Image 1 (cartoon, helix red, strand yellow):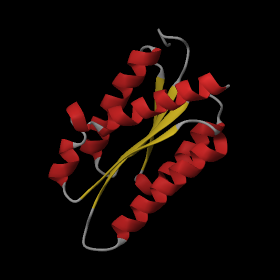
Image 2 (cartoon, helix red, strand yellow):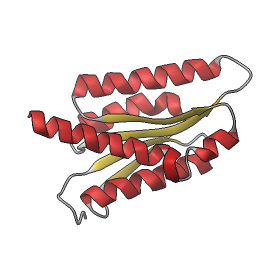
Image 3 (tube, helix red, strand yellow):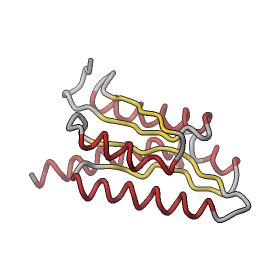
Length: 147
């Protein structure tokens, strides 16, 4: 049950890098709960970043959420797979937001190595999970002002 204003938020998270996913979810949840109250967040796991757009679409179309933070990590490897996954997850998430009108944020860390990923998921200035939740909240305010 939410202690806040009744808004609920969804987090869809790619679990390919489990430790990074947990860090992202923790910081995004903290931001959402500060805005909407404890228990105002539902988390949905998917295998990786490529699956995030469909999960975001399902959450957005459910009508239950004021916004969706899409979280995960893609670390460059030796093949072009990185480029396809990054591009398609970003495009797909943006498409969901534009089609549904539900704020969806791109909180996918796209980096060269694990050190960079850790630096962007651990709080502070480069906390991608928190930034994704903050983006959803900001878009929600714009949506409310223009409604």
